[in-house]
Length: 358
Ligand code: SF4
Image (cartoon, rainbow, N blue to C red; front, side, top):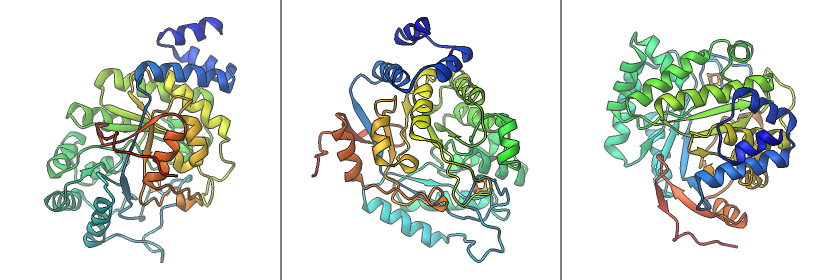
């Protein structure tokens, strides 16, 4: 273990076996210290970034019916909805009025929405607003490709031409088909998720990567997930950030208990240690709350994610943490870091102008 700790401290890449040994044997503070050392090497400036954006869940109608999801509804449900274009435009106007620079549009897999719907929607948005469209997870893109009988490459090319700027890494859950078959049997398998990401990167489109953990996966599968992200990144270099977050069992078919703070922090730290080629690691205040997210900055995270002017998916599981832009700024400063507003590609938009407010 001492050799392993020394290797990480000296910036050596660690193998799957070594990652697993760290995960199983190192205590939470040791993992935090190592992750912090990696983070300092990659981000020596003590800047913690965040973005002002809004999640727009254009529909909750979904035919995949994942067992961990509290958000989806069947088309026949009285709670089923599909936002109109005008409603989406209204949400974008509110986002821009609050200094927002990005919208994250994700929905259920709606059987009636083909690629033309999104081409039309994205080009209408781009003709009206100056905003980054960071939207459609690999599951949605794969569905559009199959529904429209297109290759993944042609699907992404067409969406890009219509205005799609980047792809969120949602729906990765755990990149192990044993887990996927159990918790989301109708969703893309890990190779298909990876194929969407590789193709996007090849076409010059950045993406993020996520990991939802704390359901039925093993530690080995978490390490395998990190290795798979690292391998894709070695090939294509298109991941801007990695976002580990915890399964929220409320109102889901899967149920069970939520991951503890220690489990979250250890997994976050391991992510920073193993993903030596992914520039940014995001803290998940939406699932952990502001206090644990603040501690996460000492466990490898250098990004606070988004202000999330609107969030519906985690809220559907009964977890509703809320933070304003000013709350995020205060929390980052209070932890001893410099808050900086960024855009989708992690360019800094405002730093010196930000003042704490007590
Ligand atoms: S996680 Fe996504 S794909 Fe699965 S049921 Fe929920 S909305 Fe549908």
